[in-house]
View 1 (cartoon, rainbow, N blue to C red):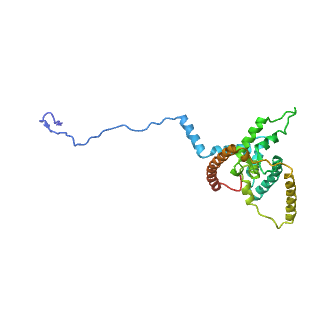
View 2 (view 1 turned 180 degrees about the vertical axis):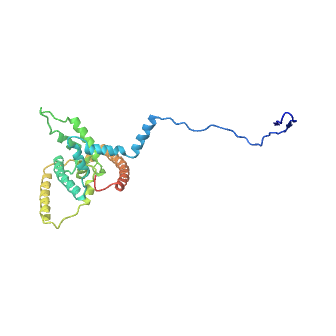
Length: 265
């Protein structure tokens, strides 16, 4: 580069060179641009509420506090109802006693089972104000068939209900009546034990006497072997399917027992 000196002096020049050192710098732009999406925000909020089970909490609050006409009060009391073996057994025992009278009404020939024809006969007794049957015979048969397809689970009485199946159908799926009987304890130490047994034996004599007056029909499987075989097969398939559902319910019940109080429903 030149160096200027006074005009009266001579000029002096210096030479400089420029060269690359092997270093290259490239500039590139990068980054993220965000924009607000109201739809995505709503989806995120809904997903979070579902995962946190907030919907269940809101539904419980409405059901147990805001329903009119005393509905919330009834539901809240039912939810806090204590469950005990003693109360449940007492309730099922009384239902069984009432079912015993009903079973005797259906089982007119005392063959120990209730069949579709017995159920149809019961509907024939019901009339409307106009004197016409409330339930038509075709409807009575459809109802009886629906009962048999669901409640007849014992292959030994295909096409008919014994008292255990009859009772289980009435009471629901809380516990099978056969299992209920196995869990009862004999109370021979009570004062009325002998009186109750005597009353039972007296009524048994009446039943035995009545059985001699009626003609006992053949069992359903003997009168309709092909239909009974089909019902036996369907019952086996239903029991296998029910067992799978019971295992799944048992797993869920175990999880619920960890999360909550098993003494309340």
